[in-house]
Length: 270
Image (tube, rainbow, N blue to C red; front, side):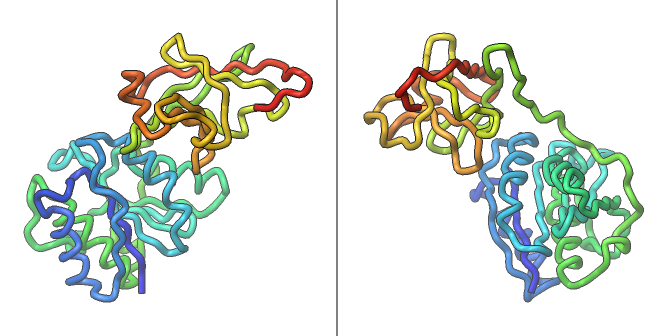
C-alpha cells in the first residue's frame, strides 16, 4: 500500500482535487491519499514549494508527493517525476520540488528526474488546462502500482529550481525576510534557530519600529502583543498572541526582518 500526498492551489470549491483522487484510486485502488493542502495562494509556486519542503520529512519512505500549482499548464513546460532520496515527486517542472531536490542532493541521496513523455501512463484524453487530472494523477497512481521511474520518460538533467531567499549574516546579526504567512497571520522568516547564538541578547526588528526579544512560547506575552518565537520547523517567526501579526503589522511575504545580536548582560535571560 503506497502513500500519495496531494498539494494544490485548487481550493475545495470546485472538486478538482477530488477528481484527481478519483483518477488515482481508479488506477491504484489500494493507495492511501493524504491531502497536504489545497489552499495555496493561486499560482504561488514558491509558497507551495516551501510547504512541500518542510512537510515531506514527516512522511514515510516511498511516499509519492503530487503537487499541482501550475500557471504554465498547457504550455511547453515539462511534466516531471522524480526520485528524491527515498521519496518521489510528480508535477510540473516549475520549481515545486526545489527544496526536496536540494535536501536529497545535500544528503548525497539518490536523485533522478524524468520527463513525463510516455502517454500510455496518462489518461486517454488530455486537456490543455487540467494536467493534474490527465497526466500527474495517473502517473502517480502507476508509480504506486510499481511502475519504474525510468518507464515514465527520459532523464532530465536540468530541472527548474527556484531561487529560495536565504538570510544574510551581517556585522550585527542577520538580515532576513518573511517567507510564509500562515492561516493565523503568523509570519515565518528564513532565519534559522541555529543561526542565533545562544549566548547573546537577541532582538528582532520588523517594519523599522518593532524591537522584539525572542521568547520560548506565545504564553510569555499578553494577548494582543507581538511575540517572536522559534516555530515548529526551526525558523524564527513573528506572531501576535491570540491575533494576527500580518494584520497588526500590515506585513506579508517579502517583509524584511533584522536580527541584532549583542553580548548578554550578566544574569539576563532571553
